[in-house]
Image (cartoon, rainbow, N blue to C red):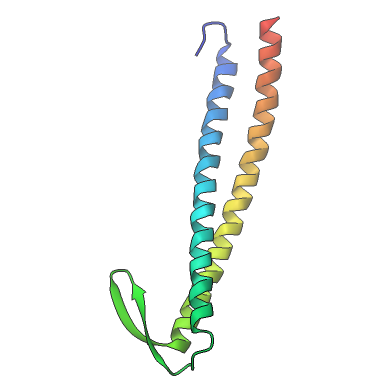
Length: 117
């Protein structure tokens, strides 16, 4: 950092930058989860009108596994619920970080204003 900054202020700036990076990671995770959620909803919509006993194939990793529509709907619904939960948790964590970020920003600006005088 700069020679004119106190060690405490330098530490706060480092914390500020770390929180900013964490927020960026959470935002990327949330975006990826929302894309996954949309794909699941499309799949559910696609098989919604099909008879439960009808055979279909679903992807598990690199394998295609024979399944019924009913089983696939259950798995997709579970995946959708898990994605929803993960989105909510990530958003809550991001909100907490945003609050810390804003508080640090105010503290840093105040400290910079004081040190410059």
